[in-house]
Length: 256
Ligand code: BTN
Image 1 (cartoon, rainbow, N blue to C red):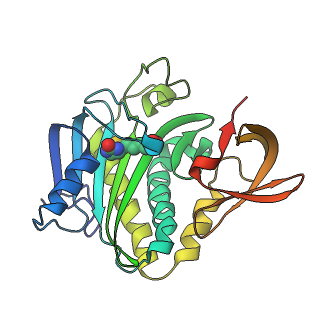
Image 2 (image 1 turned 180 degrees about the vertical axis):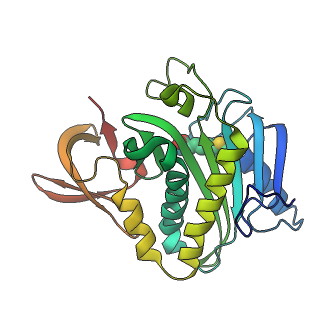
């Protein structure tokens, strides 16, 4: 489908909107494995997901019709498996830049790829890479963004939405188009070999960067300062006893 709010070359040019699906990531992975041709940059968007998936095996809940829940197909065959984190940086920065005109400097990226407004979570992503040998064959990039939802489940303590912040409803397709256009921009930077530019942009937008904060790891609570995210995506936290590196399952951020 050709439509003018998607001003990029390919991300979002083939947009499939579903009323209801288990998970847009699962749906996209299924159509890929049925070996039907799926154009690069295809976006599968759902009004309602009944089995939305999040990181760390969590579920993703979003009030139907009020939020963005979609997945993008990319084929970054120019990236090796060990460079997967650069894609996380590109997608996070694409979402960030799309929302920046609305939300300005309170917007942050919480490592590895949550979208935060101050200390509240606006959205997140689940990037599932399908590898072929040492290269990335397909990348299924699932993004959930809270847009017009006003009430959240009591256990979603730090969830927020654009509507909660700005007291206004937003057209989902317009925000989707902005996100797709910006992700394409960063993706093309990666394709042109500007990997470190993209990682540095990501680092400059990082939540809690260079701030003394509390964390928990292995049942132990400590103070530390995020000083870097390495090329392989590991979080580097400086503590009294030196620098430690963590993967996603190894560290928790403790908000006051
Ligand atoms: C997280 O923060 O835990 C990641 C949430 C990712 C949710 C999105 S919604 C669209 C896509 N389909 C899914 O099942 N998950 C992702």
